[in-house]
Image (cartoon, rainbow, N blue to C red):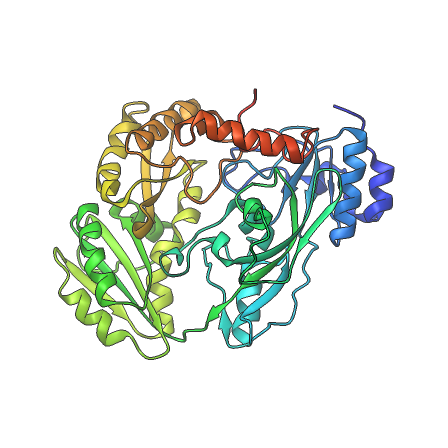
Length: 454
């Protein structure tokens, strides 16, 4: 690798924002799972688009690759170094514009956390359509880069659906800016949408123009106990028909709930343990409780249910779902696989996951939860030991057999590049590689991420 242009980088962003000491860079160098990461050549923290552009120009001229990082909540190794790169942290790009209430839009810097964005929108009487458990750490830039989904995709769609404009630094340091927030624009290729889900391989998003949604303050949350995943799938169409204000439908199982209770010291939701659970949330301008209670009480296969109409009770029910990731990580370093299949095949996937993993590592523990409406499961395998790659291969091939995607919302990163061909055809991969080469001919931005090495 080429010599790091440290002095030029210090000139670009200030010496105090170029970190080289191992004690200062360590927190940037390993991802949330603990599985991925290596030493960075240095960590650079620019403050705005102009500084990002100067850093990229400097690195491109020196032939030094750049790894782009937001809140470092990634789970597939896409925002941590493979070894020696300049790690460009966007956490200082925290400018947050005034909410345009008439348009229902706001401009946010790439380093703005999801939680801060939500609070900002709500203070203006609006809300943001994406939500996920890592809201206090995940940043706008990372959400765009991975086309993040989360718990409200059922109602509002993923991050790409919220993206009305973006400003981005390309691999040569030039800047593309489409920030007007136009709802109609037929002037050629949609470069903004192309950046969503590109995982920092085509350009570095420095700010985004975002769609906001009405703020719905009347909420009701229900936890349903069910015999299996089949039942959760079976009841959802009728629930959606009867509950137009349904905003979340989350699937969890007994073993995952047991881990959450163990590490979160939470009480049991029901007097008896049940095999599967479906967490529902309705949100509206008027109280949706009666409609939710009525629909739940008539759900086929229902074993038990509890409903929370007050904020404290709702938080308590959501804790059973949102504390899964933290509880799993407390047990050890997991193999984390984010996959999706056609909704009708979700019960088959859920039923075959544990036997598939056991066929590779009999002693491994498989903890599964996910977003039932999108056919999206988060597969967490504990105690895989040195067989993480074999477990990954077995699970992703099962997903491909069921006509699914090897990455639903976390991205491909470095973790899944070897399996991209299970979800994308040779022609599609060639087209993506052609776009990458056109925009980044030197391979400066996030090399080794998303596309397999040739």
